[in-house]
Image (cartoon, rainbow, N blue to C red; front, side):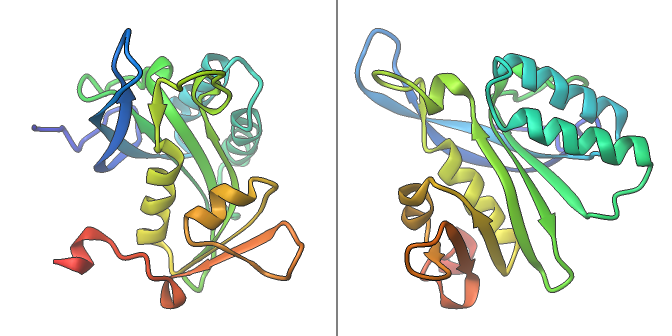
Length: 196
């Protein structure tokens, strides 16, 4: 499948990843390729796309906070915090405008000089994150975390989603805390490229 890496809404295509999509009128899942993109908080179109995603996520998610941070950086005109925003989307072409209704998950990280990062927020679409029965997609958060694990040597976060982070190779910084850390050097997680 050909994907245009020159996304004209300002975002950069990172790579294609595979998630699980619920088969309509079924309880089974099939694999589906989706696009991972990085949005630029200094790009007006990208900040607008984050705002539209906030609306598409019903305004009940961490995407509100991601938009707040991006808007603050855009208004300042410089990204001193080195904030990076990533999203998985089902959008495959016509990238001149990010379709907020196709965004599955979004994350906001602050890159550090030592190639580490602090994961401020990660939010799957509420229909995925808070599904009562079978969510329409599975593994979207895990796939986005894998992208971040390929990019950074370490990732820290503060969260109560303990099981999610532990499943993805994070460990608690201290027993009983909600501070998690992942280190590439101590993680058995390897990218496909490293395994070949």
